[in-house]
Image 1 (cartoon, rainbow, N blue to C red):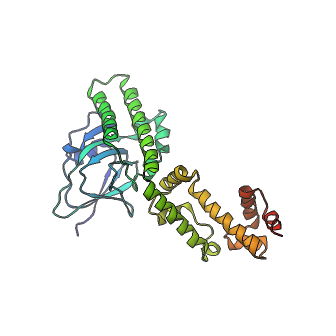
Image 2: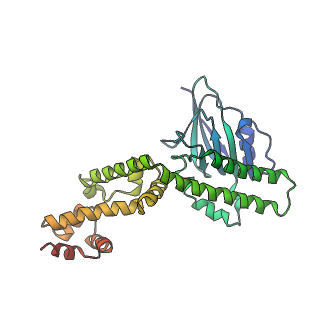
Image 3: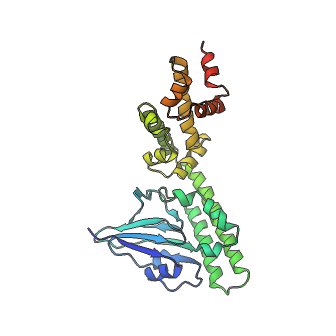
Length: 305
């Protein structure tokens, strides 16, 4: 097995050199035609960038992983990596990396003291992109590629006092389209999405039916997401679109259903029920129960007498 090589790039210039490209025309922003990029050697490469990467790829014959998660390239062609994320590219033996498409690199310093400096960090797809690539129609691909080329054309021209604002406007437009396409993807992938809902229900049912609650407390959003092989951000975004509720709200709904059952068919005290449901303090359970049902636990139990 080939050794895994680790590469960290602080600047876009360093990345250009590593991929056999000419020095970037602008030190803080670059658009790369992936057909011009030299292939990587076979084996594994771990890469960490200190800048944003937005890639639109076709004919990609390598495997990408983030942590222990495989990147979903079955349909998706676009993905987002934020500064500080380590991702792994594996090129199979006797194979050289081939790809086509476009890649946009943006250093955080380019965004400093602009509104995008904060808003780009709030884009959910930079969190869950490493688990779920974005599928685009041909028309949508052309739209994204066109925006990237507009940015490239801008820094190819003579730089003036308007250049940065023009490129920032194009970048903001690209992020807006990406947000639209991701939300479209949530809605159009109905079969797999509803399979996820079934799996979510199974995970929560299994957790609530054993001793996990008394030992470990309520399941966390992180726990649920890991069992669904998703990032927490992606799962909550998906559930919001499908059900109008976040992952945490689904966990609380399952909790309230379990609490109602115990209050209606057992003689356990409210404190005992709270402990069996993973609460260290009964008053915390009572407060949550009332916020969800408009009844205190005792009021709810009295309605069955």
